[in-house]
Length: 314
Image (tube, rainbow, N blue to C red):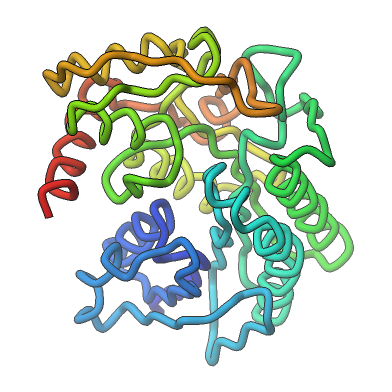
């Protein structure tokens, strides 16, 4: 059987690098494209000796040339944490618009199946909880978070346009909060911030009153869901995430307990347009992909804490 070829943009990032691992394990040739604006070669250096793995340092907002056949394109290139997209607002908008356009152009040229990494942020600060795929969202287009939210909403729109107008075979995954090894310690998200603060014995910073909720999915579960979606025949968006909801304050307390830390929780002002609730309705994933998360939060957190301990001691 002829070897399948997968192009993964943003492949040196947190999720992209785990996808590279999975696709190499599946026996595919992986072409990883990343300009390392937020990605890190350390996430993929273990693959450099593998004959089925190729890395290109390239900005996908420019024309993407890949020689030979391509079966799958997974577009994961984008800053993805608030600290990144507030620092890199133009780049975030460009990779969501121009980058998606270029990646879709490659899919059209190669007759490849295209999977877009979208996000729960398309739901904004939602008026319903949990959020299902039919919910249109509540997004502030001109707020500081709009550069990410609207880039992803545009990316979904152009993906569906290419599907309908050019008959490109497309998939859209809406990714909810995910955690695990290879997250950056300083990426500004709750989990790495809490874990690094707790491991160092510093105050753990909770924004707002801590009653806002999140639901956290372990990275291995997420990758499995994405893989199943890619191989399915579902063209409309699918939520992939863990519906186990927890308040941010409870989550901070859990991290302090699991790290055996003496840290105290301190409260700071909530950033503008920060969502009050975030929880996926995964009915569609269960029914269409036979997928649901398997790793409970405590197990996943212990694995992630061990990874961060090594990062901090380096």
